[in-house]
Image (cartoon, rainbow, N blue to C red; front, side, top):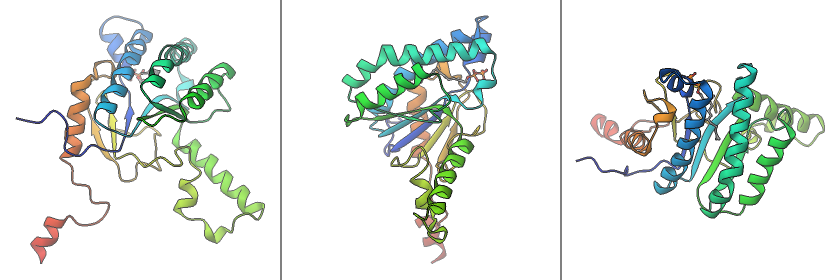
Length: 247
Ligand code: FPP
């Protein structure tokens, strides 16, 4: 019998929550109904991740490309984020969840910026799971912003171009201080990264699930973790058993 929790939990799981629209379409409902159902799965996923002793859970809530959706859908998604923070912040805080937000904060509505700032400030000292909300996030935009900071440091003489290394970039991307994701999950059957964590996912394991995000329950999450547990991570090296065969 397969054990319910994996032997080695990843430290950091990142999820592309895809398929809300198709879930709603299949039921003859407006796309917003799919997003609304998706928010309930967000709550469940945070709980399951905490239970599985995952230290960081990153959720792709709104991409920098999602502004291209119909105005009504964008407005509904903004409303849902407001609803989520207002409804769940107190509970997440009580559950010792620390919230971090990644993405470009400059170009979002001031009230949402204030809510996200409040969520971060209020939960900063919490020592449980860190919930990283990727909002108005695009990995290329993140990299451009980080490179711009480095260019500024070189221009002002605070940094020597020859000293630019991986650590210099890693400390300037939005996830600075957060370990790279061990596992990236994408629901809905699509198998692409869609401008998500391009720098950080260099050595991540990927699990693509056919289920749509509003159907992603605790069992589906645990199955993805079990699949991760079966992977052999080599980071460009050779695994120990393969070395033994050659010796
Ligand atoms: C992709 O489904 C999902 C999104 C663009 C938004 C995800 C947002 C939520 C789950 C709710 C808000 C999140 C938080 C953290 C409160 P899609 O619309 O692309 O689905 P489709 O591919 O089937 O059309």
